[in-house]
Image (tube, rainbow, N blue to C red):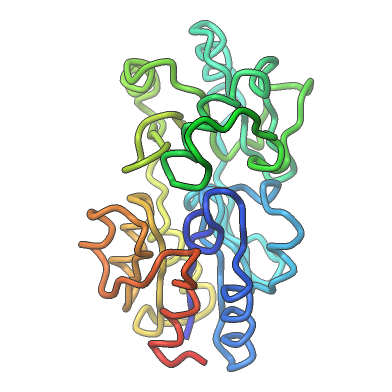
Length: 277
């Protein structure tokens, strides 16, 4: 079998805690001959060493813009340099701080780290991972791989995430970038706290199909597990789609099976239920 797993809210909780039971489940599945791939909105630079140390057969990053198997890049679609320039200039013009998600680093605008603490705190409160009234938050512990003070007109950008001042910023971005994929992400019920801009016509399901073709494998032998709306295409594409209990009702409705929350050993319980170890 081949298992495709989301990372944030599925392996990790939204405070960045990785349950040991999830680590154990992945290692048991791989020991039994199953393959496990992470499928995430993250780019490679955002993954801490503890995540790589679990052991994976590869990853799909940038919500489907990058595919890697056994340390070999199979596909990588990036935002072009001129598109990147357009995004950077537009965001700066609106006073919206951002970071560019690349495989070798997350390149932040000048004031991003200073201004992201409040929306990031709201994001984590909305996911029930920190308490209302929390005063301090160490940004680099939540968003790993941030780099400041570097060139922002680049040709290796998978996607760009930016702080929303209001929902109108997202709506204006949709109009400004019709050739790109514009979305939002955030707190409870995926409240729009951040926007993101990425390569058009990529998603997790398309990337999985490409990877299966590369492996010579069948979707009949696949599982997917996730918690957010961006995971729905892969839950529906794979033979068995599993929703984490803390996911939205929309995600649960799209799944074949609903497991417990991430911090209640939901990942382990799901694959134990299906007999992969």
